[in-house]
Image (cartoon, rainbow, N blue to C red; front, side, top):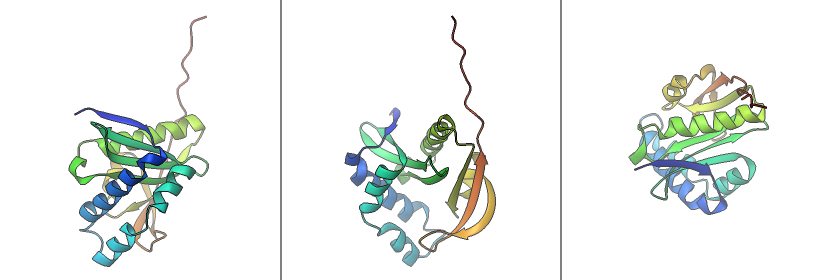
Length: 161
């Protein structure tokens, strides 16, 4: 099944919520306690609505079904989310989503992206070129690792006159 990426719309909020809850429940359970997972997944749909309104959000679809999403705040250079449904994890969906929001950031003029990686995701971000800065706690109080990546400026393509 071919993977397609596109900008998120308000209509994607329920699908984004399903992906987020499934990803956290399945992929993060080895690194966080059940109470932490519950706090993380019980934030309500307002979280995703706000994300779509305040960030650049890209969704990944297979056969018209949202299987992942990523979000970046271009004004602050912060990667706010990269989540892939567990049934589609490990196949490059997350890497493609991350590459897409990085490309958007470069075009917007962002030269450095930062993020708070969950403990289960630090290797994923490390493979993508992010380097640890410090141990931290997320806004929900979860242990995480603050990471950063320097972005190369976009290549300019010369046009024939």
